Length: 200
Ligand code: SF4
Image (cartoon, protein in one colour):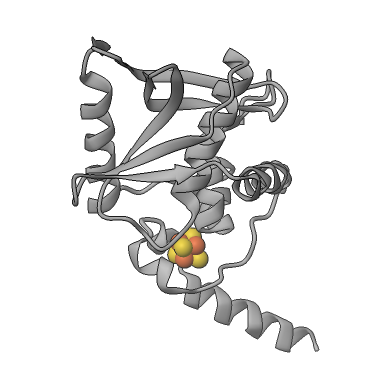
C-alpha cells in the first residue's frame, strides 16, 4: 500500500476478489511468482501500453492512463481509455477468454469510478478485451457492481492492515494460481487443523 497517500492499488481489488489470501501474500508479504499465465498477461499489457494515443473519426484512444480516486482511496492504471460520441469508458486487456469470475469486472468498474471522479463525467459501461478470443466484453457498470467495488475496497483495506494473512480456501482457482508453491493451500489447511486438534 502507498503509505504516504494511503491509496490502494486497483489491481489489489482484482486479486482480493480472486482470493483474499493471494492478495495478502502479494501486497503484504511481497510474494510474487510468475507462471505462464502471469507472463502472458504482462506481455499483453505491455503491448496494450506501447501503442500510441490515437484519434480516428469519433474515436479517441489514450493508453496506460493513470487513474485515482480520493473518495475511494484508489490508484492504478487503465490499459486504454476511449472516448466515442462524447462517451468516456475504460478498456481492460486480459489474456485468455471470458472467465467465470467477477474479478476483472470489479477492476474495470473501479477504473471507471476513478475516471468519473477525475473528470466529473458519468460512465455507464466499459469493456474487457480478451486476447484469446479477440473479443470485447461489454460490462455495464450497474449499482450492484459499484457496491461490490466499495465492499472490496473496505475488504482490501482491512486485509492490508492485517499482520497475518487469511487461511487458504483450496478451490479450483488454486490450479491457475502462481502462488501455489508459496501458499501450499492443502498442506497449510491440514497443518492448521492439526494444530487445533493438538490444542484441544
Ligand atoms: S493457492 Fe489457492 S488459496 Fe493459495 S493463494 Fe492461490 S488461490 Fe489462494
